Every structure is written in structure tokens, then in C-alpha cells.
Length: 196
Image (cartoon, rainbow, N blue to C red):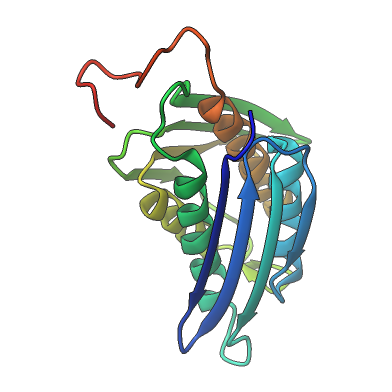
């Protein structure tokens, strides 16, 4: 399978973002957002989802990291949506229960075309590096709605914010990889309605 690539450029007064994702890659991540922890998370996402991912961001970091993080989520979601295409033959659903040290995170998603986001976690720290922990939900919300997926992320256990967030990004990667896999038993769309 080749050609399942999404490439998006989005420029506003707050951010200038380029994202390219290949769903059938081998986990290569080339990322520079200006926010070190976000770079680390996106590289982990690429590696554990086996996606080839390029991300270039110039954001208004002199204000704070909010626009950079949220807008990167928007563009990543758009790129995923473009890469998935008409969704014919994909498994559609994906889930992962992922441990990372003391943390345990559940991620489940449906590439349904109907966005809905559920996020259940509480952080004990305000930031990891220059990444405010309150922006984790904003990032995934942006990915969810711009890609039109149903996304649930729940922390079942954990204390360390770095570990919890990393588990979220890795679980999301594994679930998305599962959902976007082509299954030869599915001749069209995995839907009784005939559309997604």
C-alpha cells in the first residue's frame, strides 16, 4: 500500500505550520515546533504508530505555547484526514491500553466522520518543560475535530505528568495505526450505512 499521505500547510497571524504524514511509513519523525516537549511527543507518536511524520512550526512563542500546540493539533488532524482518504478498506476502529512506568492510559478511537472527544485525566503539575499540561486536552481535541474522529483518552493510573502524557501520545499512535490498517476482508466501508 502506497500513497496514503496527508500534507497540509496552514498559515495564520499566530502560526505557520507544515505537516506531512505517511500512514504506511516506518516511524521516521522529523519535527520542529519550537516546543521541545511537543517535539518529543510527536516523534514518539510517529515512531510508535509507524508513521513517517514531518512537522515544521513557527508560532508566536513570545506570547506563550498555546497557539503553537493547538494549531499543530489542528493541522495534524487535517493531515490524518487527508491521508485516510475515502476510508475504504480500513478497520476504522482502534484502541490501546498502554503502560508507561507507573502510568496506564487507555485510548480508543473511531474514524467515523463524527467528531466527539472524551478526555479523563487530572495532572498534578502545571507544565512539562514549556508545555502546559492544560494544553494536552486542547491538542487532542484539535486533532479529533479536524480529522473528524471519535476519540476517547483516559488515564487509569499515574502520577508523573511526563509519563502520563507520553503514554497518551503512544497509545493514540497505536490506536490510530490499528484504525487505519487496510483489511482485505473489508470490500468498501466498514459501515452498515454505506458511508462514513
